[in-house]
Image 1 (cartoon, rainbow, N blue to C red):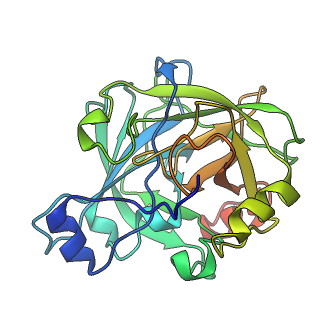
Image 2 (image 1 turned 90 degrees about the vertical axis):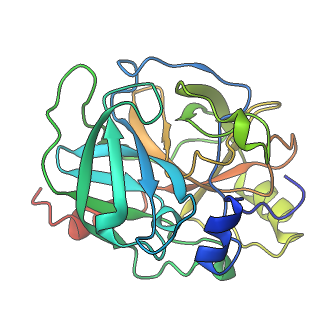
Length: 262
């Protein structure tokens, strides 16, 4: 992706944010995915109480029955009470609704200025999700995937860059491959973005993430979570990988933020 890619929200939301927010990715070159195949997937809406425009639309995943993981930029400047989580359906916004009682972004997340480093957040739900065939937890991977490994990205993001009408109503998925970090640093360095060891680079020609997919899962062949969609420099740029937060690096932080006893 060649030009700095920032999330495009509708006009009223932009004014409400007071700035152009960062990317909310979408799935390009994808295929329909039934929720039973990826029952950890959730759809997330984050709206400001005093904002009359549309809010941020992202993905997320069920880590525990009362804990959701997503990208920190998806909930930036939004109160927990204004975040809604939909689960249990491949139809966008048609799953069961659960509210958020507490939202915890990584303390070192500082947004675009710092290249979206530490782009991860934990959401504590107001009530537990009833687990079953259409809603279940996902395990965090123990190891960062190898370069060339084929991984699955899923989401409800746009299928055409900057076209709000291209957002699918049905969950889409696409397989991408993990890319070399040095190559990724070279590409993003041209746009003054810093790629850290806590990020994963992945892409495939004609496939990838876009507006609306941020916070969504990147999953390995063992159905383990390895990443969260974070940012890119534009949708479907063949030589520019998408960037994902590496959850393997943040496993201890996730446990601490969610007060989980192992």
